[in-house]
Length: 525
Image (cartoon, rainbow, N blue to C red; front, side):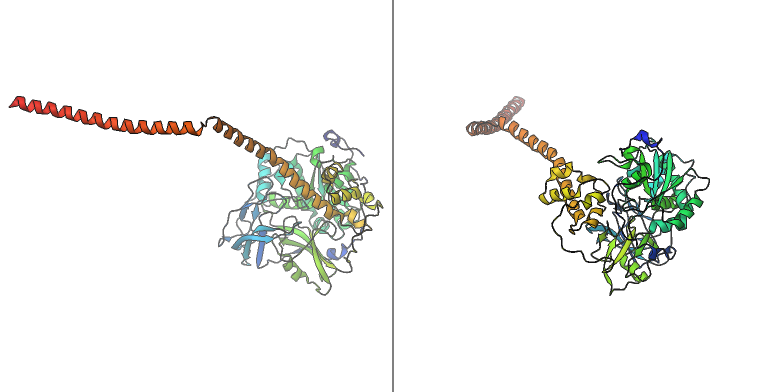
């Protein structure tokens, strides 16, 4: 299978292709699909992280004590990789301080604490102009103002993923409705109930990206969602492609391979070969923003797991604490052993339940011993090769593991560690219970630190050299101590002499004037 190029995209036939590697874990999706999507009640407090994606945090434009209305802008994105943040409901700002968020390290992030008033009062929303006639730059600005993100695990902003200066280099837009995690059903429920809105959002995304073609991609087994999507696509140029249910088919690079048969080049992104991948939740948020004028203040999130009494999909407000949603669904604490956010395989285990939902939070799972049995002790690698067979990027996980253990950064780079998508398929099949992804994440973090240090080194070298050159120039102008003392003494004497000479001249001038005056008086007598 070849790497794709920009010229391939407009001519290639779009159909279902096999992807490399992958696994087929047992599915636990049915329980959260038994009921319709439920709008989440308004909690007493929302915790709104200023950093809603992996980019830069937004700058708060409100202060403690301010009263805000629903849809009001409360934090401004000053950089392209940040996202605007709006109040999901009305209430009062009670604090702006750090709080744990459901990211990989669960590091404290600066958050706005909103005490809600349960009245849900909103600002007046003006309906945007028709997107079909609006200027492209203005349309892109509407995305930025609405705070829309891709809603996938990466959560990049539109202005970053689309590019500030898009010159029609996108041949294909893929609306990704696949979700290969065994528990997550947010995309499936969204298409089942809001297919018309998703298709509308897909058309808008196609216009803003200037893509030649657009396709919606979903797994074959999602029959209700497929039927709803086909109905919404009648008389539409957008097509629907069904892919086999295989983990991790929902990854950006895997979805490109599954639809086009092309590989994204090593170190690259789908955009490098003229393909833009957007999550189906992005299309839904796009419809609400560009058609209805609503900023992005909520998202569809799956709440599931065996200890969950009423698993379901919520349309939850951004900033809702996970603990609040657990209370609504009911959790059997006698069986619960923990919680995971954003998927059972790639997700992050929560150290506390008071963390807020982010714009990219797709799923929260309550763990049980039955569904998540304790993993056995880590053992030595037996070189079975199962991990290599499962890797969708065709890496050699066992080699990367060895280099990670020995901290051989050069070999890690040459063996493609940075191409690893951390899907966890290798760890899933490992009979030695080696947490391979944990080793890879730690090694990636180390490589990033080294790269950052190397980028800074030339600056500090230049700074040091300038200092050295300045010292040398100063030394050349410095005289020996003896000569310096002589010059100083002469200067001092000259100063005193000049001072005395000035006083003497003034006295002589005064005497001369006085004598003239006396002579004049005598003559008058």
